[in-house]
Amino acid sequence: MRRRRGSTAAPLGFAWRLGASLGLVVLAGGVTLLGVALAIAPQLFQLHLRMAEGPRIEPTVQNHVDEAFASAILTALGIAVPVALLTSWFVTWIVARRLGRSVATVANAADRIARGQLDARITTPAIGPEFTQLTESFNAMAARLAETESMRRQLIGDLAHELRTPLAALDATVTAVADGVLPVDGTTLETLTGQTRRLQHLVADMSAVSRAEERQLDLHPRAVELVAVADEAVASNAARFVAAGIQLDLEVDGTSPVVEVDTQRLGEAVANLLDNALRHTAEGGRVTVVVRTEPDVGVLEVVDSGEGFDPGDSGRIFERFYRGDLSRTRSSAGTGVGLTIARAIVQAHGGTLTAVSEGLGTGATFRLVLPTRAARSSDGV
Image 1 (spheres, helix red, strand yellow):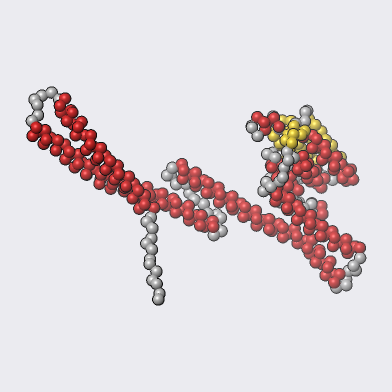
Image 2: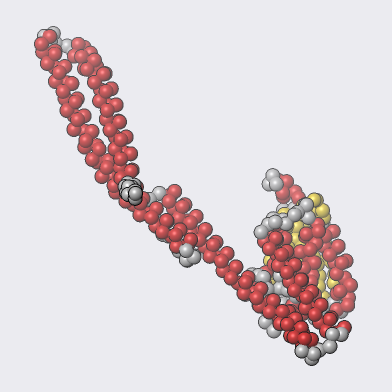
């Protein structure tokens, strides 16, 4: 036997529910007012009559006055309560329509975003600061999602581009060996090993930049002089600069600031800056690491006399895989994420990393700024 499904009634809309709620409030207030008025008003009225000067009111007249007073109260409240109910429902209907449209707009935009339309935005309704804040927060969330999606697509495209070259080289070499074109000798094996290492290096760099940008770095900060971090980085890279014929110097302008950092991670960031300067500075050039103290911050600058870059690219050079000179190859330009990792490490320490250049051929300056230990203590950090 088939059972017929009972149709469930559609729930009442927002306007009806709000109107019913306010109607119950008005009704409860009217009943309360009526009860209080009938309990107190007659006694107060009689008291005023007794206090009034003049001839004494006869009992029959007194009863008639009391009944008239009670009847007037009942009549007035009997008219006032329904009128108040109608008025409240009318005002509620107007307000609920505005609120309902605003909520429906937000729900509509949220549904569009859920379906992948990340350009959905809502206008600010003039119905109070709370809805204004909701609108601004929603639009900020939508913008952030759109930015994240754009970065995701760019990352996939960049990865595909970066992986294409070593994979193509591996495929060509393996095919040539299989066809007997190339012998399986030391040169062939070295080619295969080199391309494999490039892939491993790229994967390791992507893993590092992902952890850094997601603030998943395992930091162990301690108080240290910033010049000590700079000195260790310079000493570790000195041999490479000598081999490339580039002068590498360390200068301390005044006293060295004391910062609370993870020395290993910050040293990695400084090493990436030096590596970038080494790749973009020609033989005979100079790279200088400058450490100074400024109000509440410690500053480390890596100044090179190398290629420089277009001032309009000062923000983009920290993006993954960005290379201002598109003619540069992988071997000469690195994986393209060293500066991204350096900035993420510095930001994880509460600092900033910026770059300036006056143009191509004028060199570049990378400025690393960290709050000093005294500034952190004064801020309660």
